Length: 313
Ligand code: PBG
Image (cartoon, rainbow, N blue to C red):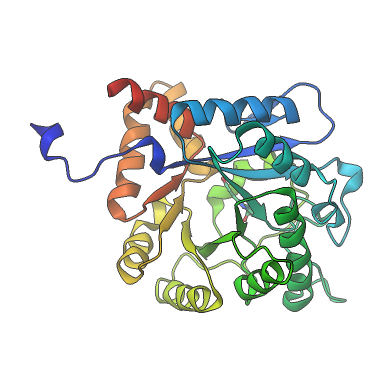
């Protein structure tokens, strides 16, 4: 009867798999703070994408990890048509076609030698408007590579509008934008920094939001929608369920939430110590995010959970 009257259900199609692909490796590289998650080779990424399709997952969010030597102040590897992310988009598109919604992280932090999400001014501060020009170019190379959805995640002001214009200019009106609308400067990103080999020293508090603020997210939301966001996202998910609920109530576009690296790591670590029941905790965390209002959830457990849901019928 509990099953019959459940108000919230998880379905494989609700899930989006974030995946890392690293340049120049011949074997997948484990990420120690995210047991079970790897930096893929181009080859193993294709396999992971095919496996996700098989399990019924609806999307994949790709992150590129360039060779260290290719990082520079402007993050040029991020706009190189042959850069690792662009190559990965082509690979995955060739592997799965339109069976998976292919999404890409549109941000410079994986490619800059200082690790910030943008380019810096003479005083070493992130230069919002100069960064927007880089994002415009990045959106175009990702679209040319065949991505279905771009995910601007750098929290620069005006990024959604600039990306929309850049895409339209080259005839890519059908590439959609998943806006990282409410993205908080979170301590829970820790393991991700290892996942992408980040060179960041310091923090992102000048462009990501403060954990104390809710109203600010509503302002970010209004701006993103006005600028042309097709879908909006709240990130992290677990510690920000109130933000998610409020955003979901306020809009009529699809709402996503990103269960981030630290949320993943906490459950895996506690489970490894035998302190919580892993599988139940994972499902409960995802059900909570769904209940709060997320239609789609980015989670590193996407394929595993989709397989499990599939087996339950
Ligand atoms: C920025 C980006 C980050 C994450 C996704 N996109 C890191 C950050 O803002 O510092 C974090 C994802 C996670 O922690 O799982 N490119």
